[in-house]
Image (tube, rainbow, N blue to C red):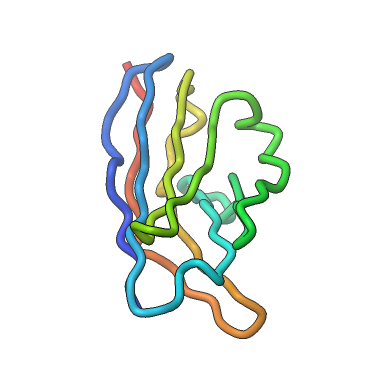
Length: 115
């Protein structure tokens, strides 16, 4: 099983990034997919979640209206489009896959928002 995040980097405030998570080794379409983030000295927090049905659960208040999660079951990928980025969005972003029985984490990708 692998979850490989990509797309992180350094961006100026107000900019955009698109994170991708490529999944393999399990039946992607049957798993709920989530993006979490963890800033230095803080707990890991849920940012966005998309169910196996394609339904999107409410976003974290801090990213509502700025971030969009989507999935492509044909390509086994989940993406997080991040717009209007702020310095407080700086964190390591993790992809997570979970079912009723199993869950898997990616290794994370660093997002830094700074001028």
